[in-house]
Length: 138
Image 1 (cartoon, one colour):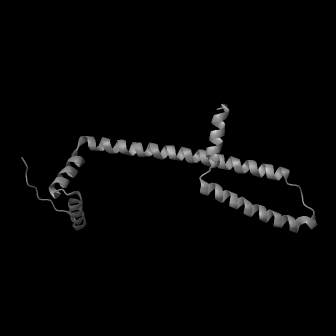
Image 2: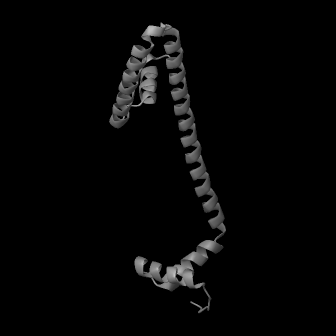
Image 3: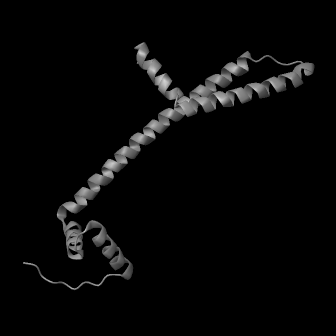
């Protein structure tokens, strides 16, 4: 048996209920009844907690992947800088201008190569993980 109940809603909420009723092709009473039942349900809080827990787990895994990717990136840059500093000889004063021009040319080439890799979707982390899993050293 249904009992009629008079409820006062804020204007914005009433307008939102009208829109939802038309969009869902359900009566306002059906929507309000389902909302009140969900709000009063003893399992409602547990379901909400489970949903939040799932979201937090997903966020935690995403943060772990980001941490791994940043670590790989940092190590790759550190290795490059170390190799570059070790292999780059000191320049004579007369060679400085030519070396600066060559350095600028190499930098532009580096940016082009980086842009092509990113556009193609080739990522260092994927290559590193693929190479490590192929070596059987993990």
